[in-house]
Every structure is written in structure tokens, then in C-alpha cells.
Image (cartoon, rainbow over all chains, first blue to last red; front, side):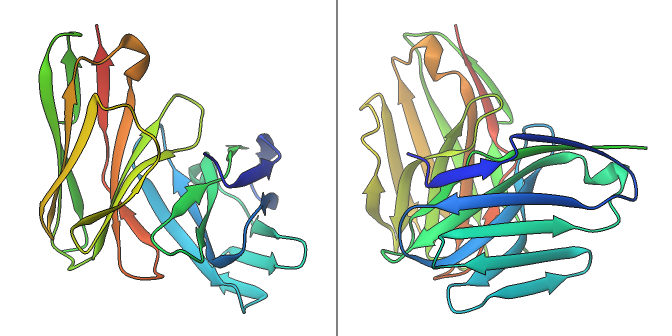
Length: 111
Length: 111
């Protein structure tokens, strides 16, 4: 079963704009991770934020975590056409080894 | 070596066939996962092996049988599948409380 929901389900923006995706989850977590998937192949890890962290940056990516609201957001700044992909959040709950994905956001960046 | 290798990339099988999907990693990760992903949906957790023992089985039908022969290998044995089992099957591995590395998946078609 899925851990939570993401919104929006689909997002279409112009190159250079920022993209924000949100993720909500249901149970207590050890950490929350964001992954990217191109064309229905393997997922690639983007960033991991631990339950005791509130914000993390990696290049053009910024992730926030609000454990009181059980939610996270992924911001991609200055988007590029190559950022077009599906983005998923995943939570690793306190049992460990139990990594479940949210519904995902399909991002389209138009050149 | 930071790769998870899945074979085969594509598989077409009849409903009476027996086949196996294979997954290999040499990163020393102690957890290995099988996920099933249908088109435009998130990966769904099927099985987790931690330290070569089955730790999570998400009530998957017995026509799917996982096996972990050693810490580097993970198999998924398939028997008497149904057309609705057609999907992308993803293998992943991780270290404790770290992000996961995914293989490119096996695209399975059951005819």
C-alpha cells in the first residue's frame, strides 16, 4: 500500500520557472526521500531528509519537512526541459527497511 | 560499483510458464526490495529482505516467490501469472536508514 499522497498529480511549467511538489504521509518516519523516474524505468535518488531536519538543499533542489503536519515539499528552481520526469516521495518508517512511495507528480518542463 | 543490475530487461511469458527475475548488487547493502509498478502509478512494495531474511511480504500472491541466495543476489520466481501481473518490476537495495539504489527494472508482459 502507498504511504501517502502527492500533489499536484501533474504539473506543467515553462523552462526557467520553479516547480513545487508536495507530499503527505501517514505514519511516523525515520526519513523521507525524493526520487525521480524517467520514462517508467529505474528511480534515481535525489535527496534524503531525516525526521529531525526541517530543510535540505542540493544544487537546484530544496526539500522541507514538517513532521507535525506529516508533509514535505520539493522545490526545483530554474527548471530545465531535462527535469521533465515523474517525482516521488518515499518514507522509511520506524520499522526500518519499509520504504513506501507516494502517488507521484508528473512534471513537464516546456522549452 | 554503485549499480543494481536487473535481468532480463524485458520478459514475455505465458500464463503456464515459469520464469525468474534476477537482481544483483555489490555495494554491500543489507536490504533488498522488490517493487511492482503499473503505468502512471507509484512503485508498490512487494517484498523486503534484510540480512538475507524475508522481513516484509505485502500479502503478495503465492505465484510470486522471492529468494535471496546471498547478500548480493535477489530473485523473483514467477509461476502461473495472470495478465494483470504485467508491469514493471523494480529491484532496489539500501543500507540501514539510507536512500535506495534502483535497477532499471524488468518489463513483464503476461500473455
